[in-house]
Image (cartoon, rainbow, N blue to C red; front, side):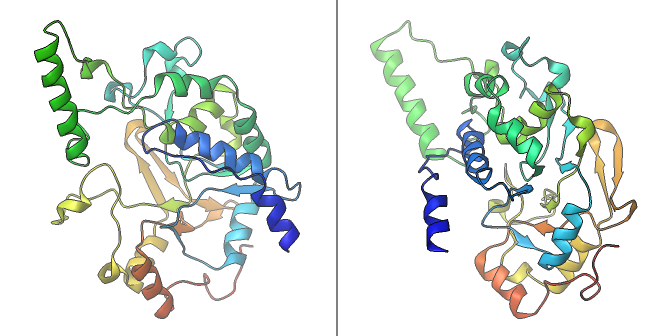
Length: 290
């Protein structure tokens, strides 16, 4: 076991990741490259430290392995929202631009495509930059304040100084576009199931907590973590995609099935509470997909 861990960590790099930058997908590529070293790995699941499993390992394994496709939430993106940078064309034409969740499950074939990509990824590095204003003023008030002060100083010292036109920036959010766009670009969309297996709650309209509103999905706290919440997520059997006016009914082996195997974002106390009340576990006991 020690030798296996030593072999694994020998290929893991310490890497600085910034949200909303191409470093997010670069880190994913590093993880995949390391995981691909083991020839026995057939599926590659992206999860975060705030994810929890909704079922036991046997059910999750059978669900994922029951199909030869990857699970990639991928929709035709609304280019009006300004994430697509026209400078990507013709390398990435707008008709290949996709949007979806970063929480994907990839087959070995598709994981290798991501790792070996030397066309789409450089475009994301070059043209996907995080837009500083006005979206991020609430999340990063000190950073924005320092930028404004710097611009004022520059205007005093250099009257000809003009700040970058924020309207021309493109808030790409690379991790929500890269895998989806790459697989579309390479012509592999017929080999994916176009949905994520990880549930996130983006409906924050009724939340009174200001910290819960913004760019990130709802974070479930200790008081939120109840068996009723978990059951409500397990009961979801379809997903509606607004940009495509498409409803995806979830199936496994051509039979109706729950849409999600994982859920996020849960704080550590919330996750421990769910474990203590035995809210997580099998689906219909130990029954597997048949």
